[in-house]
Length: 403
Image 1: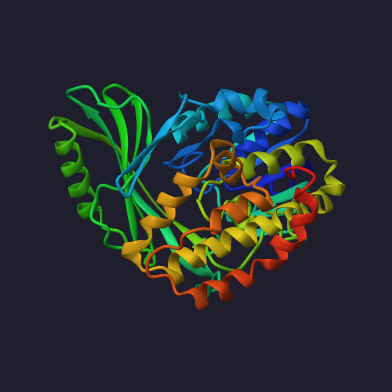
Image 2 (image 1 turned 45 degrees about the vertical axis):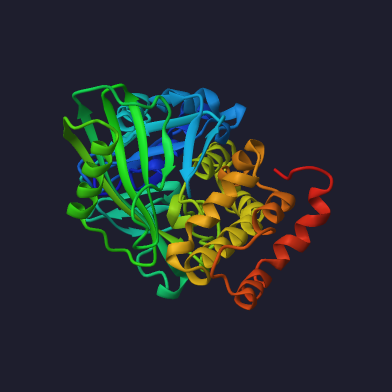
């Protein structure tokens, strides 16, 4: 490649979830489009496991998304505050290794380039300058590099942090379903739970997860908790085959979906994630589909419209984070999740996780017996911050659930 190259149709900066999904969607809808993915690391997708509900994937996207899915379960379990519930919603999981393999096989053609170990140092709306001096030009450039680290500290109400250990067992795992939450662990450092994905009977991912006000996490402490958990479940023999860790900001304010425009931004960088859960797959798919089906000169307006459609829900999710991190004592936070899974039906749970929830869903989540230790005055003041969403959506949702 020369220092100056002919224009591409798309340049996707960052080799993670959003860029991979965009690349697949573009390849599906525009098989002759010219695109490049630029990743500073040695491989695409890093070291992650992405999970989501089956209903997060619209029917029109299934053809290009389904090849990514590596593990499937018909349902999953929740155990919070001594109450267990099976959620009969399909659950899906993708490892970064499988994700990278699929993306590479689909995109490495004459029309597509995947540049790893490559640093982008300057982005404009139609060009990217690399650290080695090369310059790539394109009709559309997307910044999909993840959260902006300089986001104002007051916007990060708390963090979802975890340390995960994929283990190989000497005996069979006792559960067929994933446990999305199992809070049988000391509730220090915020709301804590184990998250488990049984890929097969003797290979399981176990994560020690916390919704905490602090971003720090200690590997040895998490490993000790996992050891105790496995011992309690009757699985004394095991070995670690992979580890992953992460700290996701759970904002109480700050950027909303699409607010980075006129710069084109995807994924966490563009605010396209569920602030109250940390799940990002559903919104990343929605963004990818719009990017692939919209003429490049109309992308800015199309993403503004999508951002407007999600802005009220994003504000409500940030209100929930204020409730969790600012208004409820850490040892009482489990009560919020216990109530969520006790009172909501599966359709409402599905809509909430996919960021398609309605006014009535939001109303059902917050109206009822408050968690212990919640100060009513503080709650009401914080709830007022979401009133525009609740008032605006009321007239819309009486006609049906909004898109």
